[in-house]
Length: 255
Ligand SMILES: NC(=O)c1ccc[n+]([C@@H]2O[C@H](COP(=O)([O-])OP(=O)(O)OC[C@H]3O[C@@H](n4cnc5c(N)ncnc54)[C@H](O)[C@@H]3O)[C@@H](O)[C@H]2O)c1
Image (tube, rainbow, N blue to C red; front, side):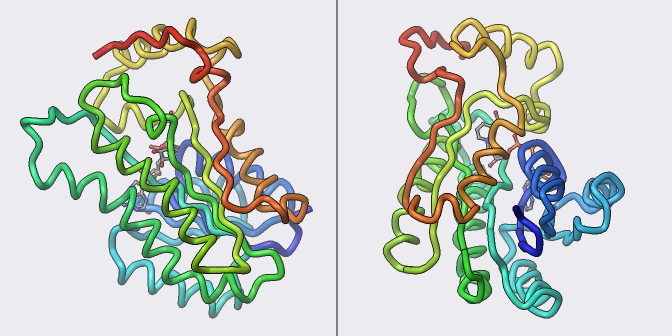
């Protein structure tokens, strides 16, 4: 279904981005993977083959994004799907917060997607079926995790940003996906050790009616559908994918 389709995924070298790139490529698409981690991108290219085009860069750096847009224009002449997926997060106590904590979150989670849209909108307009997927989080819906306000407010901004894309860039569809617990390296990257990650999953598991932690492909399949012509009337939607976690009244909390 995605033969000749050009997709750009930020954060494509790990987790949800990697799983989504693999699905797109298995369906015939070409994926430009934009990620901070050059070595991980190179491994991804080895794994996924020549239709994975690696483009090292930082979503919080406008020059990197502008250069990536020039690269995509020269190589492909257009972009069909932009997936704003790169992300990171950690816990910060409200009264101990430093200005640098704010920028550490917002530069990647909010400024990055906005600059991506700024620079790639002209290339998306050249597509017959242009769409943008903004990856938010269940954290945008709930307040029960202590010390999580920077990540969760940044992810809440993605919901509003999607609405403004729909309003300001008619012709380009935009939708938000809000993943729940998904098994990826993001928790290790946030500094949690293996034992703590196990504890977090054990705590979450009984509260997920689907009975399992999610996989990157649980999110990737939805991204593929929303970017396809079958979803041509889905515009400005926000899709929660958490196995029923948010319908469970007893979240409890760890911190
Ligand atoms: N895993 C979950 O449980 C979960 C839940 C809700 C939302 N999310 C969101 O899903 C998205 C993907 O997360 P994941 O779990 O796959 O994480 P991950 O850590 O496995 O992958 C994130 C990728 O983003 C890249 N990245 C980070 N900062 C970057 C930057 N400045 N520029 C370019 N690339 C950068 C990293 O190098 C990494 O390859 C994130 O936005 C995350 O907030 C994840």
